[in-house]
Image (tube, rainbow, N blue to C red):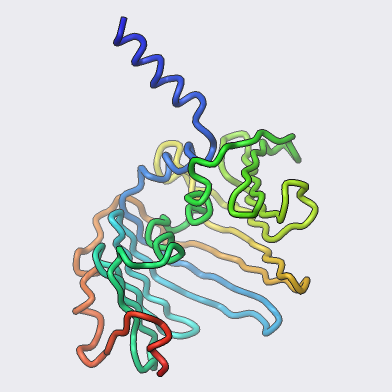
Length: 246
């Protein structure tokens, strides 16, 4: 009888898990990623294009080689984080355990996913909203924002909208995900997204991201997370960004 009750509790937990937990659970089947990312940000100053080669491994391991517009390399070996932009007087380095929340999210985020947003919603009560344009929608009140997830019939996250309040009459940002690839059973990764970020002064910044050469759960060379291989011994690292340009 106890075993039956235990199994019922397990199934009940799965049945009532929210969409954030479902999506994160799917993404967490990914252990390694390697890919190429092309990102264009277009604002008042005009378009700026970024090209990066990214290697990610669970356990806070990351290697980002930013090729344009400014060469920059980011490496985290799981214990310590390093970042250095070509031409800067110093780099930045700090133990992973001492990184700010946004920087920790960048390590925990699996490339190609919306995890940097979803992780902030983990454990937040979910509210079912009316469908729009065939999308099932759920809302979350979090950090003085109202966040709405839109999902298609397959359960893929296709829209992510941020509003100032639950009234949803003032949008802060909108993300639209497309070109999905099923990288593992039931694990869908968008190879493209478009975003619009609305500033307080009513100006807007748009962002387009495209992913190529996406590979999951393939071995990633251990050497990619060894900072001594990629940073010259002459590079001096500071533990705060304010010290870099002193």
